[in-house]
Length: 234
Image (tube, rainbow, N blue to C red; front, side, top):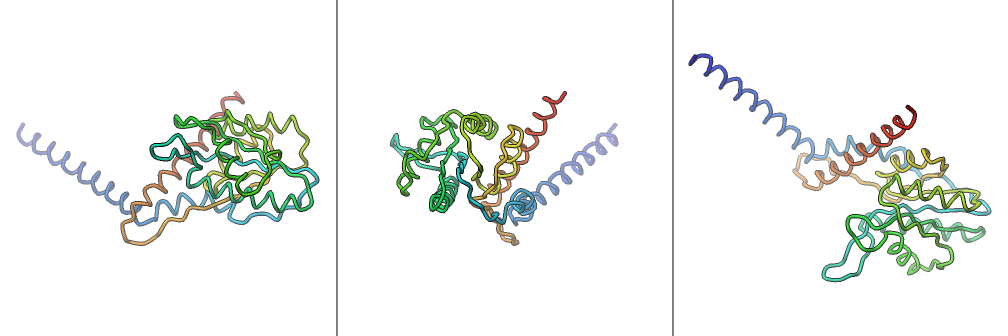
């Protein structure tokens, strides 16, 4: 019995040693940037180069929400750090379009994460400060995720007659956004507003944990799209 007990202890010790080694290797691969770099490239690389736009007579720029931040000890909200790049890219596209053609900005984003303000209202305010007239906004105030972004935007597009639709979001988010837009029969030209780049070196960088988390969130979201399509085709 004592021999069997000793063998069991050795097996347990060996098992947990292997687990510890694997866990340590995983942590090093993340902090060194190897894993986040591996995860981010397939998400962002297809949208690394923005296409040359041929503006049509009547254009729609769809700006997807990326969250808001409540300022400390106030009831004031501002766009999240990642959302600012989407707002700036949308403004650039709008001003380029308006030189010769009609252009509307559809801002899609309701209140998320227990906030009181819809993304769309906060982003509209930021875009107005950049000089865009309020008449050129169409607000979608009820979506709470990428699926409903696409679903509710489809309703707006069906009520209008746009010759061209452009979607603006972060590079890491674009693949999932495109899948949902396609599911709801929206053909949109993707324009990525920003990209995430891990620091790949042997120094430990905690920021790479956040990038890994962002990337895994997107992959889980992409799997959700495929499962949703599969269930609806049964």
